[in-house]
Amino acid sequence: MSTTLQQPDDLNFFDADTQDCPYDAYKVLREEAPVWRDPVTGFYYITRYDDLRQVLLDTEHFSNERPKVARDTERAERMKKLYEEKGWLPSPTLAGRDDPNHKQMRAMFDNAFRAGKIKGMDPLVEETAYKLIDGFLDDGHCDWVKQFAVPLPLIIIGKQMGAKEEDIWRIKAWTDAWVQRLGMMQTEDEERWSVEMEIEAQHYFQPIFERLRKQPDGSLLSDLVNTVIPEWGRPLNNNELHAEMMADTFVGGSETSTNALSAGMMLAIQNPDVWDRLKQGNDKDLRTFAEEVLRLESPVQSLFRIAAKDIELHGVTIPAGSMINTRYASANRDEGHFECPEKLDLDRKNAGSHLAFGSGIHHCLGAPLARRELYWGFKAMVDRFDEIRFAEGRNDFRHAPNFCLRALKELHIEFTPAKR
Image (cartoon, rainbow, N blue to C red; front, side):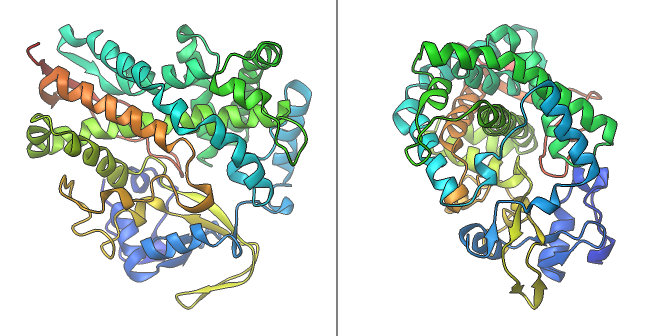
């Protein structure tokens, strides 16, 4: 359902229909209120490309560390107690830190996710993508989300994090629970369930941490467990590792790729001219397609910053301590930066300038791996399928309700296998 409201204060980004197709609402804000204070939440939405770039690059005025008072509600304290009693209270993640603490921690992550290590994973990504499709190719149909988009990145990051391939659906249940909590639309009972699911994941990974401390194996997780941060004089502790496992490895390293792979198939079917051109086998077109999918559907619709000081932007004063909602998905369709932004254009010169991975010091550290997964995922799709179409009557094209992420629930397709 498309949002066609004309008054910014009528918009509700916690409404399921608005979330399902938020792009008209974003356009209203870009045109009428580029800095908009949500009357319900008090969040300040930033929706234009240039403004958002400014926010992401200006760490003096826009902080990632949330002030303590913002978290200390009675409900938050009950969740904290649950972690402490049954598991490990997650420390602030890399994304929730400012420099110099962030810079010190980021250096360790940059080393673990260094280009050579990511490039060395290419054969595994390629093999996994083709293997998954070949597993259902003779059927002539599939749920693309469940049978391909979910398992591909989960298998890849799971191998690097010491998980068994047969456990990926168990891990998916944990990441789903974590994502639902991130989405800010849970009751307290639902949030408690999410926390308990995360604690279950913690007890799955804790023995892996302990094994890798004794027997490093060169994996990404082994590097994260054992690398000493010089300024700290120690490697990450259990509380820090458990926070990173959910936020920056399994959710950051799988959920967003899953959502982009799902959206890519949907867009390929909706744009037959693009599909025909991809079938010609031009590698540059395939890479641009991946960037356009990230731009158009923005798997991460928004995240947050905190106003570190009083800020004035477009005549609006944002008081220090205010929550700022960085609407990446709106910036990625800003007419001021992208010509015909609603169009999937394989000739777009600035397709890669989207903000789907953020920008500045908090640019997504998993972006190189995500791009490899999208490249091989879409290449396998192009190589293995001749014709693709939606399965008639089986899709409602709805996205999971979530304030921050955009995820198709399912995508039933039919296809004609390519001749091999």
